[in-house]
Each structure stands twice: as C-alpha cells, then as structure tokens.
Length: 158
Image (tube, rainbow, N blue to C red; front, side, top):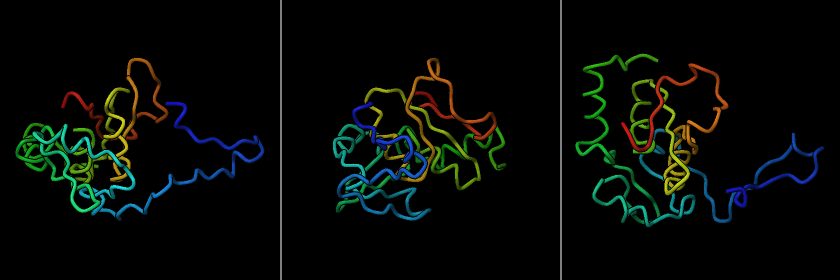
C-alpha cells in the first residue's frame, strides 16, 4: 500500500503539503446525497457491482455508484437499524452502509476493514462521508481518542 501514498519531499514543506487529487477526481456530492451516491471517477471499481450483486450493496448507473442500503441487510439498512433499536438505544449522540444510515440517528460509526479485498469499500465509505479505516485491530493502535465514536463496525461481522 505504501506505493499508493503521496508525500511532500522537503521536511520544511510538510506543514503546507496539500495532497493533489488523483487525475479525473471530481468533487464528491454534498451530504446527505453522498450517503447514497459516489461519482465513478473517484472510485473506479466497477467490479464490486458484480461481486456484491447478490447483496444489493452497490449499483453502477450513468457514471455514478448508487448505494441502496442493502449489503448484508436484505431488507435495507433502515430496517436493520430499527431491529437494533429494539434491543439497544441508538437515538443518542457492509463496510459503511450501516454507518451511513446510522448518521441519520446521530450515531457516529467507524467502519473497520482488513487489508484484503476491502480497500475499494473503504474508499467508497470515505467518498460517502462515512468514517472508515483499513487495518487489523489486533495489530494496530488506533489514532483516535477513546469514545470519539459511538459505535465501531467491522466489515465482516455486524
């Protein structure tokens, strides 16, 4: 993954370093539209629409990815959140779909995914305005203070 990183060359310039956007990158949609739509140019991974077709997680439509709220939630993320709310209070302050829909309930969720085939899904989450992180929790120390997020969500287990 290091080969994908962009760095400022001089130490004196690090504080003023702006990471240039990749070629073809366009401004993401504003929230709340970004929860459900991502420009194809920002995350050119059409293969996920095939890999995740049975999960109804993402669809490609006219140079835009659409997230219908499916994923591991066959009846949609909103229905799943209603079920969660019946067993735990969530009215107080698959990768990222749960977090995107929980934002409506003022629940800030961090989605975690391992370094395998989930890189594109984490990139989708970030483009949608949802916090997401790649890494194995047993091998890294998170750069966030405790209690900064209301909920943590792993890409494999919900």
